[in-house]
Length: 77
Image (cartoon, rainbow, N blue to C red):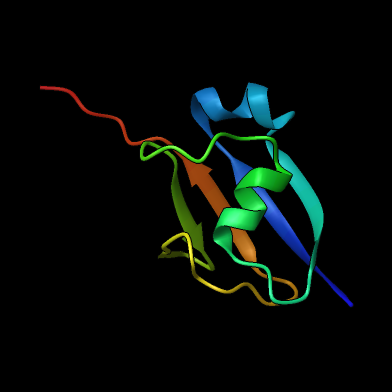
């Protein structure tokens, strides 16, 4: 069984992920770390993830139809 999730990718992460909007299929029981890998991204501390609009850790389980957002924080001063 698989689940389908929608991924929005922002900033410098778009190029390595292959685009700004991705639909990916993952095995049932997949988590955020699995989605990062499926998008071809390195799992680094500067890759932040939202699941359905809420900040999520790498072990957060995903459900069918989840909406993920990948981005890097921006700082300045």
